[in-house]
Figure 1 (cartoon, rainbow, N blue to C red):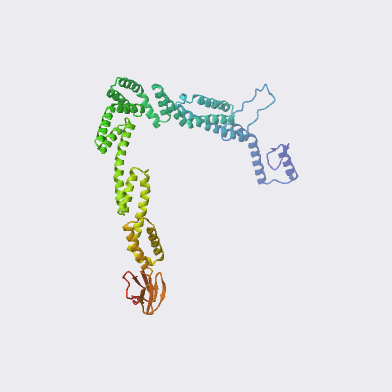
Figure 2 (figure 1 turned 90 degrees about the vertical axis):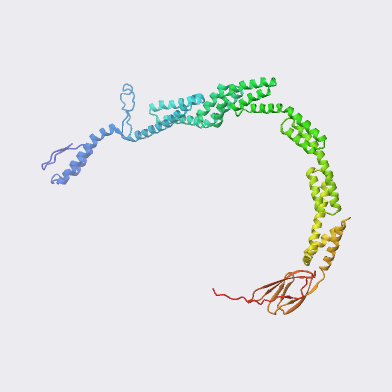
Length: 510
């Protein structure tokens, strides 16, 4: 359809909906003269429409997001579907495919990095089966990648990557097994196998101390075995010095060889057996000569050699028993003398010496208990007699009275205890007889007698107090407190006790 517009304009060809719209809008106005702005807008729309129709398809057909050359899709031969056109891939789909491709490449990069690590760790020597299986799984991803099925490629690469990661994470277990196998190889005298195992362990873990030590031992194993054979032959011929020298060389080559050290100890004991017998004989001679201390010293030297230790220890015990019996007999005499003289602390000390010699002696255990009780009672009586003024305290009085009756219940108390009890009896009786004491004050001071009560203010008062130590306190407002200590009885009763607060406290301005 074409529309002829007069007024010095070029004809414009419009088709389809554009022509219809234009006809409806412009036809009724043919009799009117179009404006310049209308002609300019119409021209711009025509140019834009031509660009959309002819230019944009060519750009889209050449590029796709994200700004990569379009990869032509593989289509079926035209002969199989002559009437079908290849399906166009949208820019968004191609962009998603590009993202997946990048993800697959990233996973593959991680896999290749792990592969390089494992190759440097000689994985073929210790994990070939799992390593090959992991690479086989990863190779399947290559097929998917070539088919541009990046999702499945990612899965295959990830499975292979995880399998290689598992190999790397299992290195500590592999190293432990290699070290164990190498140790077994050393036990089986297979030096080269042990070296191979230790060397491979050090490839995987260069700082492994067990492998470092083991490799050194494996390298000297052949020489060590030869020296063992040599030492055995020398021992059979009773050439102990030379046998020991061979074993000592083994220790210098392999400081961790416990067998060589044990054989050296055995040879040392064997070489010194004659010396041991000689020392034991010397000890028995000293014992018969009634020199037990020297005999014990000889037996102890023999025991320290490590040869026939039970024999030496038995001799020591026998000698110590004889010495102990003599010591115990002497201590029992000391105990009897101390108990007879009521020196109970000496008796306890002697019992302790007996128990130190033999802790199972019944006479010492029972005797010490009785002696300790008498020693304790003696000390309590001494303390009570020395401080009778404390009897004014009812609790102290009753406590000492109980000690007095305990002492009276003892049969065969002895002269010392009897005299102590008699003296304590007098002190206890006198402690309960009150004496008159005069207290003098100034009628202004409030007086308190500790353990008795508050006496208040007075000029003079008389109290009946049991013998003992007392403290009087005086308080008066504006005056310094006073404290008077005094003793009643025991020849120390004062004529009067003065309790006055007469030192004024001066107020200070701050």
